[in-house]
Length: 187
Image 1 (cartoon, rainbow, N blue to C red):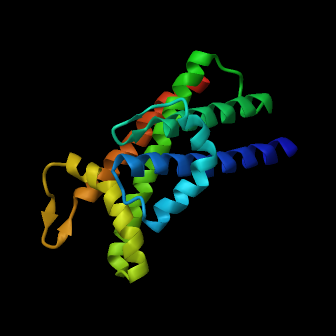
Image 2 (cartoon, one colour):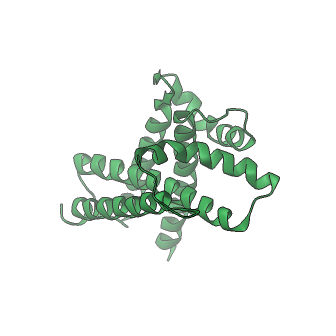
């Protein structure tokens, strides 16, 4: 019972931490407006973790690698804690490295997936000035992915490109889940 509660708390804490850290990395990567209130909040929440790591990692272009290093460290800590609680069988460091890469990739896909779903739902509802502030940030986040699909899939007023991208994201999740299961369960 206590083991299940601790596992749940580890998963929740990890989920919040990794989402904020990866959002910070992705928003810096797309050069989102640093003075945007949501970006400022994400920066303030993640600064205690990122600033000490930034002293040893480089910033190349717009990529802040301290965010990725923090994501790797937090993911390793999560899996080590799960192994200590005996929720997960111990795995070798090499397999753990693969699991960490897959876990971070899965979280990046989830961020983009939810960004596209929120954009789709908000396009049906209409927007208020508050929503426009949030949606402008999502638009900046998803614009590079939209450029990966070079053609426009339009039928009348509907653009099907986001649906193709969401389908590709779900496919990416399936592929990651396949390799994750191979690493964790069949190693």
